[in-house]
Length: 157
Image 1 (cartoon, rainbow, N blue to C red):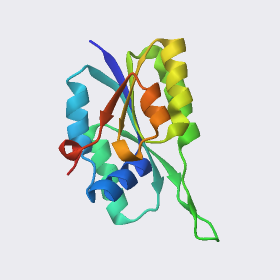
Image 2: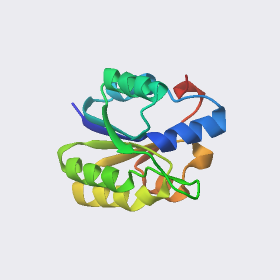
Image 3: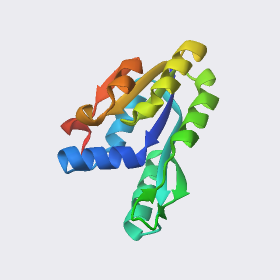
Image 4: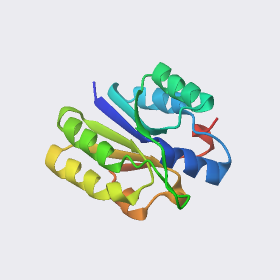
């Protein structure tokens, strides 16, 4: 049975599905689709922590589905901008597990991950699949993926 690891850039998926569709992503449906392809041996969801009730409820729902939820504090800068970037953490985790799985599934539209996918495909011989909102996913990320799965109505709540 194929071993699969899932890595979700929660902020990216939240904002791209909200901005494009005005709806939320259906993580349970994603889990069902991926589980049909093999065994999910690791599933990490990377998010920022604000501590509000709505966010805690969402994080608990992810845990109930089977995700490990990794949190970073939400930092509001004095200029009004915010920080809560997980790119390095996701990259380290993907590189750590890639040699032990057959497929890495990344949910993000961030082109910064293109080099990571190229590396794990070349050095670890894994399939690197990406789920993203087509209009908001970097072409370089789509091009570096073994397979690109467009997020559409079928994966929304």
